Length: 437
Ligand code: HEC
Ligand code: HEC
Ligand code: HEC
Image (cartoon, rainbow, N blue to C red):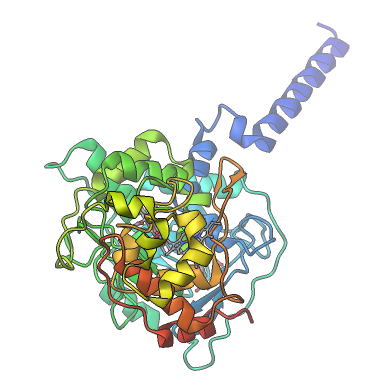
């Protein structure tokens, strides 16, 4: 064999390696080499809704900078792109897993539990490896520095969090229950772990800890106030919970943000927009199967709501329907501002226009969500890239505090709804708390 032939072969081999190597390292998501690990990680990142907190409005994906309120002051989510200087580019797989499951950053400082690591602690090793692969190879690096928190000294010291973790952090990944079926276990794993549903829906104790981290605790997903919304009771209560929803209703809600009973709004809109609509049918049904197995967490508030059926006279005279209870100032406001969408019978036009008759959020004693959505409207649902057609308008500039209290009291007392009246003082408080800075 002559040397030119050998050289040519070498060059060909190098070219092959070079081209193949580039293909291997620059398009990891498509390479066969990782067995779809990056693609799998991308799906899990959706299930975990990492993007919701780790991106600021108008900012680059996962570059951080979203301000988050804590009882002690404002903190900012961090850059989790693979940028070596500002992001997590130098994190090893073990560093990453420790941060996400135990709330300890690479340099050893403790993360505030605003990062829902107490939920993510349940995520299994294989899923953590896929998430790491995605964040290292499927996310574009962004050179954006982190923002220091507004929490003043000495409250900004992070070492007390070590004690918090000792008391409240359960480091055990989810363990399948042999007495339950595969779908139930899959649902429990997603709800308690990546879905971190309890971070909003489970009430917190005095140390900001969730009062229960799984169905073993009574308070689990029983509803909680969070960021000026009330994250609904997801347990089996007939009036205020999901007792009247079927598994199918619930999985439709998670995939489309609406069903015959309700439409997503407030912080749940972000969960639907960024996360649950991307779940596979099997996974969204598993979540529904699991949640529907949770027994009612609270005593029922009054007798079960009965579907409202207007009688013949009511039907002939829409205004007559609305004048009951007679002379209520809220009825007049409802007719002027709300009736054309939510209907004289409060049934709306589900799934596009939320029903108010029998709606669990309307029957919930805590009126936070109702006041907030009437004051501030809501960011639109985006399903498959399409924006909701008739989002709830903002009545902040139109109705005063007493008028909002009146119309909501009317809504809460009509069409067989029996929920407590809304006090104008509560509207005043929320108007202040949600004022744009
Ligand atoms: C509810 C909001 C929220 C969600 C959801 C969330 N994070 Fe975080 N995360 C935070 C906050 C806030 C911090 C910074 C906490 C601090 O500075 O103490 C953080 C910090 C981190 C860190 C440490 C980064 C560093 O600067 O060293 C990593 C890694 C991380 N998150 C990964 C993830 C992953 C992966 C997901 C999705 C599975 C996720 N986060 C979802 C709020 C969130
Ligand atoms: C960031 C906070 C947050 C997280 C995380 C969150 N939710 Fe919600 N959720 C809310 C709020 C606030 C509401 C009330 C507004 C509404 O009904 O859309 C709500 C409402 C709901 C409703 C409608 C209940 C009703 O009676 O109308 C369902 C169902 C639901 N959430 C399921 C879930 C599931 C399942 C998860 C986890 C995969 C989850 N949520 C995670 C904040 C959250
Ligand atoms: C343009 C149509 C429209 C008008 C007018 C309107 N709404 Fe709504 N409303 C909606 C939609 C749509 C939703 C569901 C959330 C969303 O997708 O924006 C909603 C949600 C609500 C909810 C939460 C229901 C749930 O699912 O739990 C309440 C309470 C509410 N509206 C009260 C009112 C009141 C009170 C008025 C009048 C002052 C009013 N709405 C006027 C469209 C409207």
